[in-house]
Image 1 (cartoon, rainbow, N blue to C red):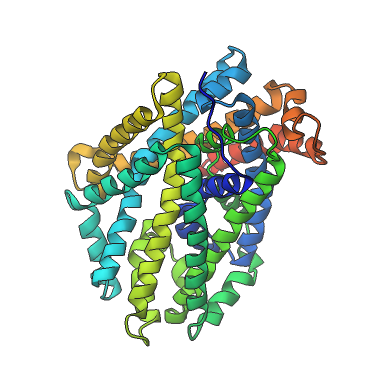
Image 2 (image 1 turned 90 degrees about the horizontal axis):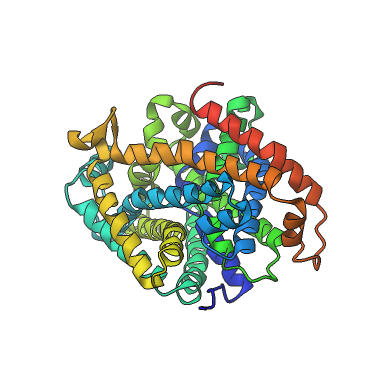
Length: 464
């Protein structure tokens, strides 16, 4: 029997799994949520939610993955002992596959914007940059080419295996991502007027805190950590038996949170340097499309960098190049983990080579990604269903239904179905480690996590 692959070092485990969690959401969703919800007040709530909801959910997937030492679908099946709970694993694989298919589209945009920054195509006012983005994103073939190039890069890394591909790639990309983030944050904080942005980020405004802010913090904590899409479970299946699961989970959520805060230090000082009325702008619902999601990083920030660093020739363009390189790295580390969920499934369940499994996944996701790309902006009626483009449907179904549902079912499964002794054995590495918070973990996974996820569901659909 072929020996199952594993990560070669503890550092590789931390960097690869942190890379899975660190993605585009850290850069474009966290700063927007922070700006709208009281600055540091939201950060405090977010950190509390990360440790109350995100950490237990992450640890749950770690327990399942390492225990089974198999792909996500088989892992749940092994612990479910033939019960219907085994379907959670297949649900996770499907979720990861669908996210891969449209996430690669946005990832490809990052490559285009690196090129555009180099050749000076993003030099112009905010209206010009907005027109540029709309023209590019709805073009019939340019975003498709960028998407295919990005998929090829990801495929090359995945096909090389766990240790030589994923781990080696993460060891190179994650430190580089961190360095780029610090460099841009320092440059942003050194601007005239940047102090207001720093003050806004770290001075809590509790007057804006209400139930919606708490629910927003819960949702951001859930989505930021890649919970419910099979990535964490799949990566955990490559953990060695002596890996300290609790310690690793704490380190990973800490890195993810630190990078999100650094993203705020990168964006807010530069934004405040050119927009003294920045808080009002970010709070205006009529301008939400410009200051959240793709609008923030592909429409607003290019003109922000250009204006903020206008005093030094070519500095704005250089910062933009570094920023989109950073964004590409964040997208790639996340895409690698998403791709691996399906690759491991095809490899083990179809009993084919890993390389062939990676080829199947890359080809299928590329085909679906082409249609998602062509549907962007609702410019092609044949790819619009019920008023939503195919891209929007994938985003809606996975983000608002599949991910919360997967997290909810996993919490119930591990909290109420899986024997407590099995959970204790995994958390303590067979009794060789001391775990002080086992009872607290059980309370969170049995009661707190399901309740929080249900609240997220209700909030998303306007029921509460």
